[in-house]
Amino acid sequence: PNTEAILVYPTLITDDVEKLNITSRESEVQFSIYNANGKVILEGNGSYSFQIKLPYMQQGMYVLKLNGKYIKLIKL
Image (tube, rainbow, N blue to C red; front, side, top):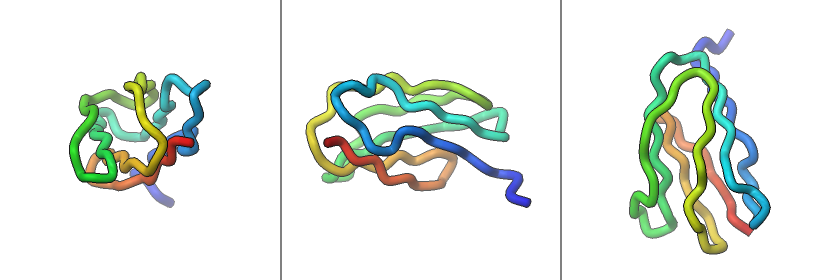
């Protein structure tokens, strides 16, 4: 069993989406969101179950880094 499971939703972001929902088995989660140029546009931390309020994002691909794991986000 995967004891380091982290769930992120939604990963497809529209103008109606204001927050990402994060659920983790870890008590401390550090996150960063990078734009397509590799620039950090948001960073912070949370634990177990939390939300990330999204900043204004232009259409395109972004990367969410959670405790060293990378998840692709797409803004439509």
